[in-house]
Amino acid sequence: MKKYFKIMRLDHWIKQFFIVPGIVCAFLLTKINFSIENLLAGFFATCLIASANYVINEYLDAEFDKHHPTKKFRAAVKETMNGKIIFLLWLALTIVGLSIAALVNSYFLAMATWLWLMGIFYNVKPIRTKDLAYLDVLTESVNNMIRLLMGWFIVVEGFILPPSSIVLGYWMLGAFLMAIKRYAEYRMINNPELAAAYRKSFAHYSESSLLISAFFYAMCSVFFIGVFLVKYRIELVLFMPLLIGLYCYYFWLSFKKDSAVQKPEKLYHERGLMIYCLLSIIFFAVLMTIDIPALKIFTTNELIHL
Image 1 (cartoon, rainbow, N blue to C red):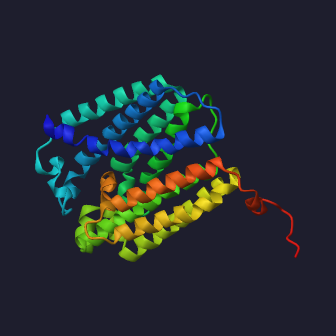
Image 2: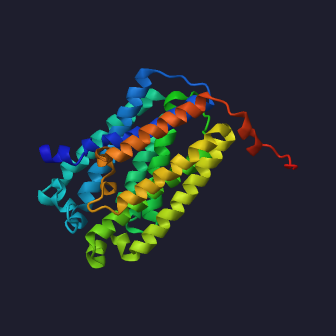
Image 3: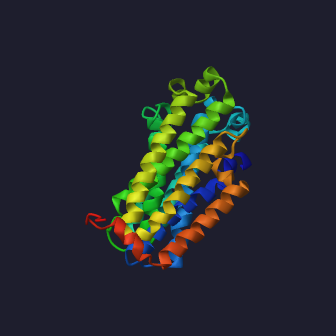
């Protein structure tokens, strides 16, 4: 059964920490009902739903992954998989994951169900948005937004939604990350025909179009996140240069040979990126604790008279 556990991608569970910003937003904006039990249940449920999506992803992508320089060594490609066992594994992960999600609250369960459905829309024919250029990025990155909402509903009582600016900004952040990942993959394969055999959407992409789309998503994300930060605490306008620098750093990583952005779960190996993120978090925390009256000029409607 070892090969079936491999396709659950337990090493990818670290990605589920993308629910944390949702918890932070709830803490900053509204009253929360925090409990360690709900936090652990929410995180574990998210991991199980993600693994259910990974299982069908690897199994249904096996015929395409054989054209990828590194993914061709995945268990689903190298070994014969029993479709019935795959289905039972996917079903078990789904049932257990959604059952645990229901223990948190009904709104968290709704978000978990949405995350599960996106795995079907993304991977399973006849929809399979993974094969459609641009829609592949936008639908995969919706998972980023859903994780934000899952983190939010872990600690928020009742149907209270976070500001649309941070929700859209987080979605566009995910789209930026996915577009950059595709750019790094496309550039690494360095063969348009082979790239299209691996991922059908690559037949409609080029290096330049992927970079331009990534730039567009980055601009949208910075705009929406900037609106959120300035609206709710003007001191956070000083955080924007660091945030923009983070996008630039990630851009730079995509140009490296065998770039880590192709495997986001391995990004913790990028020491420079981790240090940058740590310093950014510290600076963000400092700005949350101090008031800078001089910055109020950015929120006034009065004209400046010399």
